[in-house]
Image (cartoon, rainbow, N blue to C red):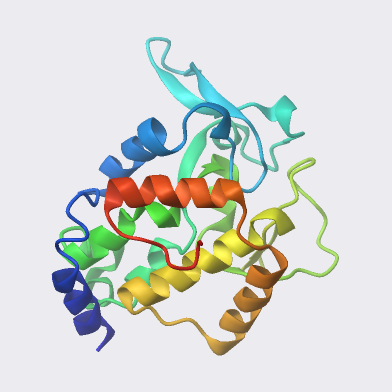
Length: 232
């Protein structure tokens, strides 16, 4: 049923999504070139400045690199991945993908050509720049609160309980996360558990929309052609 609902949403929003990125790869280029530019090149969870820097293994290439000194970042385990920027799905691909039939049939690879999945995977509202190691450690874990979990990334206030499969983000972005989940649920008919919705409602109240979030949403609306009604 959710799959059919998503198809309807896709068909009924053709005009609004006239400039929606055609793929995840295209979305990443748009984010880098049109959404996150200049002073707003800051990682989502850790607040690290980032910039283009020489690739350590490919001298003729550059890659987006977090400036660890700007935020007190320290690698937990994977220094190579901690030294690059990755585009994180706030609502993980697993979470929105597994509600589609293509994922049931063949996982993420099975959804590679599914138009509904591709639209969700490339939705700019759901993508943020993150330190690569944090993106990997968060994986598809749900967001939640972790009691007495030690920090593992230096001064970065991001915690992961690998046994419970929970990630706790810093207070400064909890409302952003909540409003992204609400947007994805409305836009694509995704299911959010009652417990998660209650948590996100509290987060949205405690961390209200600020000017930076409004500016980002306005930029994405101009590019992608649709609005996140939760960012006013």
